[in-house]
Length: 101
Image: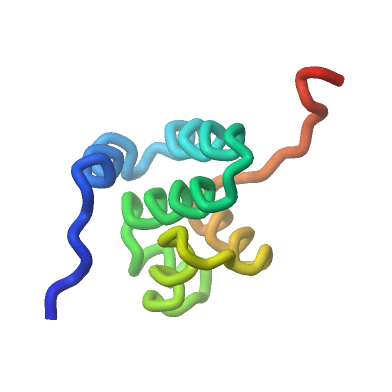
């Protein structure tokens, strides 16, 4: 059985940022800035694939198939899953006031 093909942008991201938490954080911050939940979920999925689904699934204590499904942008994963995956990616969420406040 063949796996899902990666798009060229996913391959480029994976090659460039696979083990760089700072670059991954910037990528996620750019997605968060859009306010688009689908784009944010896809960005997290890109980061998961860049660091390796098996590795992230072990660190997040999630099954690989659930990880794929939750972060391909078609579902809205539960917040606890999002937090587990971000921790597994060595990413920390930080709250700060909007620039306009």
